[in-house]
Amino acid sequence: MVLIFADQADGQIKKSTFEALSYGSKLAAQLGTTAEAVVLGAVDNASLEALGNHGVSKVHHDANAAFNQFDAQVYTKAIAALATQAGAKVIVFSSNTSGKALAPRLSANLKAGLVSGAIALPDTSNGFVVKKNVFSAKAYANVQLLTDVKIIALSPNAFGVHATGGTAAVTAVSLPADSGKIKVTAVEKVTGTVPLGEAELVVSGGRGLKGPENWGLVEDLAKAMGASTACSRPVADAHWRPHHEHVGQTGGAIAPNLYIAIGISGAIQHLAGVNRSKTIVVINKDPEAPFFKAADYGIVGDAFDVVPKLTEAVKKLKGIA
Amino acid sequence: MKILVCISKTPDTTAKIAFTDNNTKFADAGVQFIVNPYDEWYALVRALELKEAGVASHVTLLTVGAADAEPIMRKALAIGGDDAIRVNAESSDSFYIASQIAAVATEGSYDLVLTGKETIDYNGSSIGGMVAELLNQPFVSLATKLDIAGGTASLSREIEGGEEKLETSLPLVVSCQKGMAEQRIPNMKGIMGARTKPLAVKEPVAVEALTTVVSFEMPPAKSGVKLVSADTPEELIRLLHEEAKVI
Image 1: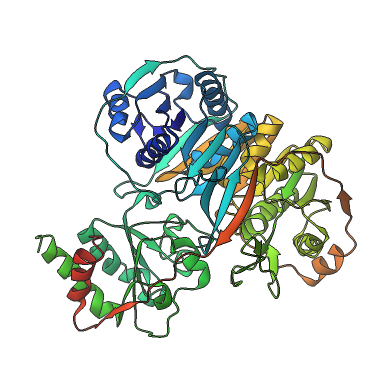
Image 2 (image 1 turned 90 degrees about the vertical axis):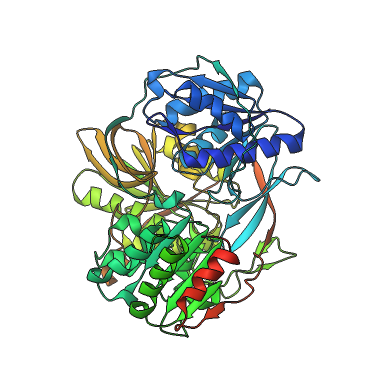
C-alpha cells in the first residue's frame, strides 16, 4: 500500500496535497497496490471523501484536536504508527513546509530510506530509483532507496495534479497523540495573494525597475494575469519589497508554470531559485543579460515601455479591457 | 547552554556543475568549495549572536566529511565559534550523516543543534529532522527567528503563505534560513585566531545507509530563447497563450 500524507492547515487540505495524492496513486498503480491517505486534525467529511478524486480509495482520519496545531514530533509518531499498522510500503509527502519537517523525522523513525525533492515516479526496473533535483535544480540525481519501506517527498509543482473522479472511504482512526513540546502562539498570513510557493504564475521584478515607487508596473501585470509577485535579492535587501517575496538561492525556490522576470539580470544565485519554472520570460533592456540564456521567451526592451503594453494585451486576452 | 552548529562543505554557488566517472561523481577539479551558505549565514551567525548576548556559553562547529573539509571548517571558525569537530566519514546518505551528528550531540550534551535549511548541493532539507528524531527532541524547520530566554525558545518559521510564531523547550533542533541573521565577513583577527582553535577528529559510529546515489544527470538543455520585438509585446502574450499554453 502507498500511504500519502494529506496535509491540512485550519481544516483546509493544502493545494500541494493534491499533487502528492496524484503522484501516490500513480505510484500505487505502477506497483499494483492501493493508494490511501492519512489526515491528522479536524477536516470536514466532504473534503476527506473528495480526496478520492485524486486516486485514493481510503482516507485514514484522526480528528484528535491534538493535531490541530502542527508539531513534527507529534505528527511523526502518529504517521509512523499508522504506516506500520496499515502496512504501508511507500509513504509520500509533498516537500512543502510540513513535508520538509515530517519526511526526515519519519525516515529516521522507521529507518526507511528517504528521497526528498523527487521529480518523477520511481524506476523500479532495477531496484527502486527516484530522480530528484540537486545543485539547486542545475542537475538531477538518481537515488536508490535501499530499505523495504520507502519515503518520497515530492518537489512541489514537479508532477502536476491529476483528477481521477471518485470518492474515498473515510475511516476514523485513533493514533498516538502525545502532548507536544511546541506551542504555536501566532500565525501571520500574507492575505490577498496566492502563497508564492503554490503560485502557478509569478511576475517578478529586479533592480531594473529603479525603485519601489515603480512596482505598480509589476503589480498591474500580475493582477491582470492572476499571478503572484516576487522580487530579486537586491530588491528585498533594499527594502523595496518584503523579504517573503525574495526568490533565489537564499530566498525561496519556486517552480511555477510561468515566471516573468522584469529588470532582473539573472545572476546564477537568482536562477537557482527559479530555474524549475516551466516557462521563463525575461524582459530586460540589456541584450547581454545572462537571464536570456535561461529563458524560453524574451523581450529586449525598456520595462517601463513594454510592461504596460503586456498588461493591456493580457486584459484584452481575458476580455477585461 | 551549548550550541552545536552543523556545517557542510558545498561547491561555490557559481561553480560549474558537471560529473565524471560515468556520471557517478561530481567533477570537483578546479571547483572552489565554500561553507554551505545556509549553515554559515544563518545557523552559525545566529549561534554566535546568542553567545554574544550571553545566552549561550559555548559554540561548537561540526562537519561530517573527509580531511579536505578542514579548510572549510577553518573558514567557518574564522567567522566564530569556540572549537570544531570533524567526523571522519563521507556519505551522500542523509540518515548516515544525521546519525553521526546525533551521536556527537548526545556525547557532548548540546542544548541546541542548528543546521541550515538545506545544502546547496544535495538540497535534501533532511538532516535537521532526522537528527531531532534520533535525539527525540522537538524540531523547528525553516526557522526565520530564534530567541532563547529562561529555558524557553521563541521562534518564527515559514509556513505556506506566511509565518508561524511558536515557543518550545530545550533541547531543540532548528533548521535556519533567511531572516535568522545577517552574513558576517570574517576579519583578520578571526582568520588568524581560527588557525589555532581546536579541531577534533572523531571516527564515525557504525550506521547502515538507507539510500545511495546511483547516478547524476544534467537537465535537458533549453532550446534557446525566442525573442519578441519590443514593438509588439502583445505577440509575447499570444505565444504564452497559444504556444506555451501557460496563460
